[in-house]
Structures are given as C-alpha cells and as structure tokens.
Length: 278
Ligand code: GUN
Image 1 (tube, rainbow, N blue to C red):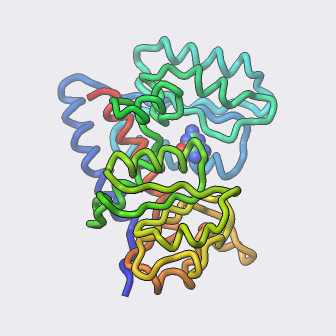
Image 2: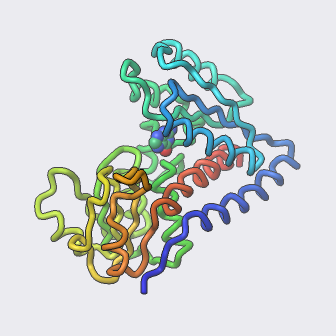
C-alpha cells in the first residue's frame, strides 16, 4: 500500500511554525511586508494571488496588493518594481506570472532587487543556489524538498529523476536534490528513451505541464512520485501530470493533485518572506 504525501497537512504545519516566528519577530519590533503585483486578470493568477494574500494574513505578514490593468506598459511595471525596491518598508516583491505578452518577463524578474526576490527567480539567487551559497530559492522545488523530508523520504544517494527543465521548477529542483546528495538526472522534451531513465528513479519529480503524461510504464515499483502539474480534465476535475489512479499502486509514496505540491509553494513563499527579515 502506498503512502499519500499530504501537502495540505504539511503546509499547514509549516505555516503554523512561521506564525510563531512572525509573532516573535513582531515582539522585537520587526514587521514583514510582501508586495504582490498582478497585471491583468487571468482567473488562475487571481486565485494564486488571493491564496498568497490569505496566507500572509494567517501568518501575520502584511501584504500590499497591486492589481494593474492588462494594458499596463512595461515601463510602468518596471517603475513600480523600482519604487518597491527602494521602499524600506517592503521586504519582499512578487510579480505574478504569466505576464501579458507585451511585457518582457525576464526583464521584470531581473529588475527585482535580489534581496527582495522572495520567488528566487533573479539570476543572483539562481547563481547562489548553483554554487551553494545563501539566497532565495524558487518556492515550488523548495516545497518539494520539505514534502520529502517531512514524509521521511531519504534523498542522499538516491536516483532522482526530474522531468522538465523550467527555470521555476525543473532546474532549481535538480540543484536542490543535488544539494541533498541525490544522484540527479534531468529529462525533457528532447530526451530519448525517457522511460528507460525514469524507471531508474527512486524519486521521480514530474513537471512537464501535460495532463496525465506519466503512467505506470514510467515508474519503478516502489518509487516515490511527486506531481507538480495542475490541470482541469474533460470533466472539469483537477488532475496532475501523473495519471494518479494508474501510477499510485506501483509507488511507495505519491502526492495527490490537488493537495500535494500546490499548497507547499505558498508555504515556502511565506518561509522566504520570514527569512527576508530574520
Ligand atoms: N506563476 C506560476 N507559479 C509562480 C510562482 O511560483 N511565482 C510567481 N511569481 N508566479 C508564478
């Protein structure tokens, strides 16, 4: 029988730990303030932003919401980011992605001051992760490491396979698993004989962005499977990149969708905000 890795429960534990830390910091006169910027009103982004604001309120972090219209120019957005970079009251800045097509996402990310880049997307923070020095790390992969550790999954010496090489998940995930002394392989859209590789995995992290991409033929018996995807299927039900019903019986532990990786991303964002002050 497999173990269900409960991201909802683990993220709640983390948020409760952070709440105590924030209250201690407040007693020392230290406030935490996160600025959240959304451009346009993509419904999925609005849900994410809403959840981030709710988590801030729960933990005791002040959040400043900037809801900008779709037609906001790149110059206007960059000017706001620069203003927040200079604002001593603001500890963290988050620009919700995706941005409208007329805005250069990379330019915006690189404009956020590295010491306020609680998403960990800035080159300086990615470079720090790469060389093993201190810096902010992207929240989703950071949350996955917490899921594994708090579920008692050992990473050291294990074959870890990551499917997907995005800057937000796949690349930082691989570096974090390496930092935990895993033996790491990255698969992507050009990988040949992908199943031969994924079948070697003791820990398989799937971040491809395709509903039910991974079935049981990708998975070694007894592997730990982490599903980063979130999609709506033909019946409007949420599903992941992994075909849960077919894969779960072959695993020793697996994350569900929803209630697996998703809630961890927000918990780790809160954790990054707290460390911005600590
Ligand atoms: N869009 C999807 N995931 C993320 C994330 O982790 N941070 C931001 N800023 N935008 C996102």
